[in-house]
Length: 281
Length: 294
Image 1 (cartoon, rainbow over the protein chains, first blue to last red):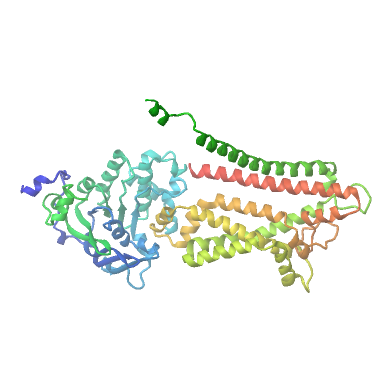
Image 2 (cartoon, one colour):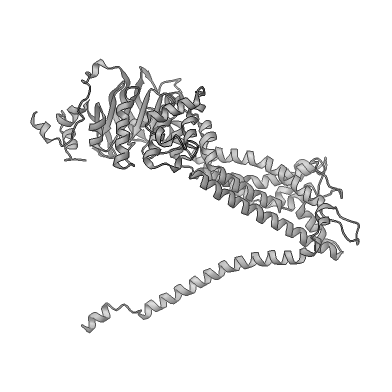
């Protein structure tokens, strides 16, 4: 261990499969010179970041560094904000999702999302999961699909006797797992998680984190988190963003991107080291 | 020490006393004003009920008017007429009103949405007699009166009420729900249909019922469009029909004191209808909210 390793107070998950070197992995996403602006002010600027298949990729960094903006640009959720503008490319299996002829609806059915605050629909637990399936025409074996999604989200046993009850009767943690079930029921390729546990208590958080370990076998997961311990526990790859101050305010930039143990023990950049050791941010 | 006692005194100073007095006075005035509103409502309902009660009978609801001076007879044609006119007006106004609200709150660019809201408010402020004469010029001249033409005029009155009420509940639907639906790969319209509208159904229903209550009492537009009616019950919207508010006007103009009592009774029926529909709307809303919250 070198000296940098000694200063990191964060425990890295053990018993990880031998990390494949990134270049052996298939990249699901590759952003090239990605800049997202609100009006004229860039929120995140010039990001080049590959995201690899069946890994958990964490995006960490201080508030305002554009983590969420970056994440939302991966499934065109920024389209909903009229002033948002995207420059550069987001290649998804080689095709630019902002390219001509690309339908954002088609993008989002392949790239699902779980949000910071649980946002179940005001419907029954069953219909929360079944709604997306119905919309996308995946109506064969609806019951089976709903059960599988709820099982994958480790919620089935808790709700199987109350499927017809309203989703608002669930606890916050259960609601968030329901949102996860809803997202994976439609069999996406990627699931984006925008601080999925920040509104949850530690036990519910642990459940979500455990789930991520399971789910990465089937999906590619990208998680934005404020919580460095969480990134260290769940992520294979970690990207550190920070806020670069300029005269007109500031914008987010990608500082460093590497395998999680390296980011937390031997980061190349001083700013990363400052952040993961708690001296900054 | 005496100085300190004055400085930290907790008993009211003259200035505090004055402020307290003003406080009590204003509170009393506000309470009185609120009570006055309740009193006016109670007085109106009470006097209408008292004067009309004598005319209420089975015949009143089931028979049509009798020849001048004779006893008995009723207002069945006006009741059925109002039912036909208002039902048809609701059928016209509700879908269009909801679509307008959806456009304003879900699809329109912000500037056009603001403009649309302004237009709706202006439309809401148009005197009903103007709408009546407009529909008269548009539909009645040349081809005569008909119940559906009255419905059309009432629908114009209901439209901004339904659209504004709906648009206000749509604005209450959290954007996180829309995002959740869109993130599943739903189109904007499916999101609206499957998540946004069901979430706001209770509010839309309340707005609709309140618009119905308002339309049921409108007289001026019906004056131009469906007032010269046969003294017979008809469900045919192509015929001109009598309506409750217009019949109240006719009956109260009559020389026969029995007709005056009938006018009061009909007024009582109208008030009861408005009260019952408004209260039902409230109840529905409460129940819907409970269901929504699991």
